[in-house]
Image (tube, rainbow, N blue to C red; front, side):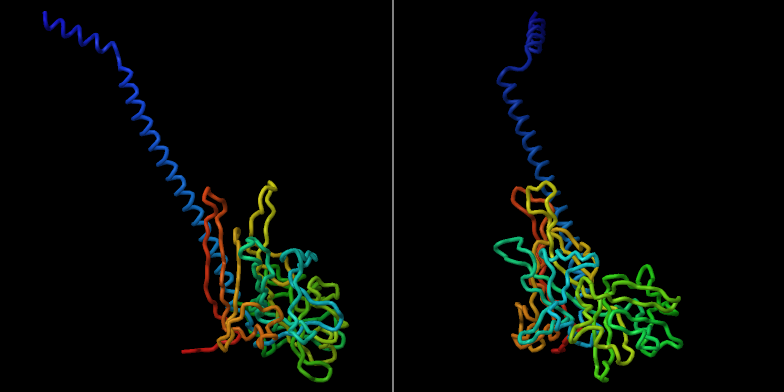
Length: 390
């Protein structure tokens, strides 16, 4: 009988279910577990977001620093530490930051004039052209960013293997130069590895196009040394090995000025046959893409512009860039505004370029703001003034 009562009691209790207290305890424990799981998931997602943003920043930093290092290291190569005088005497200043389509608003909304040393009226192209405070202001506290321009000769297109054939009076004018491959090749000709003959000047990969800059060195009508930089405006093929390169006066960079008193191709007319080489004039600067929704400042990008060609992006979210310059005698110059002459130096006296800041930011901002990386390094300008201190 007792056994029957126990069984009845057990069956009755199981039918009653959980009490209110038991339900409250169970719900509380469940909420705690779910809350902990949600918090853990949120932290994992945040950690993954931070890692992905930092990974992207590091990739952009590598791309930016590698290209900067390459071009800064080559600054002045082939120029023999020369400061190249540009056209003057016409009131028209040669500029960079304009492409072959005459778009000139890339660098902080305007073209940039080449530096004119204090006390002079002649603009110069150096192996390195500092651009102190010529970039945009992306952070009011930091102030304007810098730009930097590097110049060196092209070692791929075998342009030095071409000569100006006779008669010079016809084939070398103030606005056009005829260039041909002679036989045998001139002593100045060094072919790139794997080539048996110079490339066509209209080669689809390495040939000349409008916006390229050609550096001519030779003599003037008085037999004195002379040089000039001119911007290509057209290339016409006369034969498989002969081309006429036009340097029309209405060029975007304003290098072609036939009436200039110095620094133009016209100064070589009447002299000996000049040598030619393609000159890379490479400018790094930051521009800002407009925000597609119009609700923010947009995305800052590091751009690379070669001579008179349309600039190409190197990396997005480069938010600040600043340089200083070590002169061979140990002086550190931060504020080149006139080519350095007012400080007793020129940019070609730089032994190294200090990247004071190359600042990256994350693509997106978290609740705590943008993630950031900042590179600081020094790069040897081995083709300018190099001093071995050891």
